[in-house]
Image 1 (cartoon, rainbow, N blue to C red):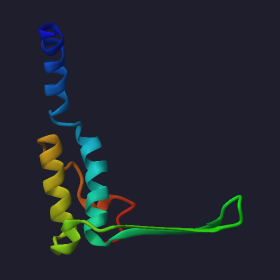
Image 2: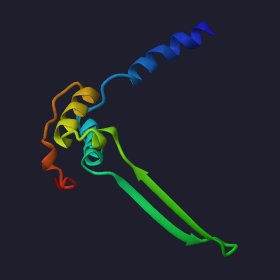
Image 3: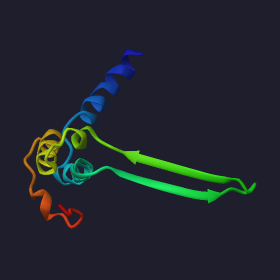
Image 4: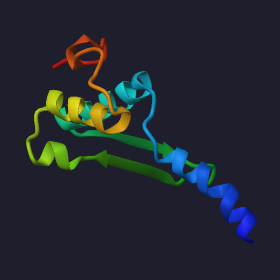
Length: 98
């Protein structure tokens, strides 16, 4: 049992470490987009028995509720995840329509 713990501990510690900067920027872009406005989807369909089925999903983050600046959310998120400042500003992403 001790051997397993000794082997697993370094793996667990690495999992907590910083992520590569490009990965952090991609992940934090999504967080900044959610800080700008909530996201959701609605689905409607009919199953094989003829019954109508509906689906509703909404994602609202605390960043949005607190009115945080999406650019600041992005910058802080990248620094926390990678330990580095972003290599590019939030508005440089094609997905960003701020």
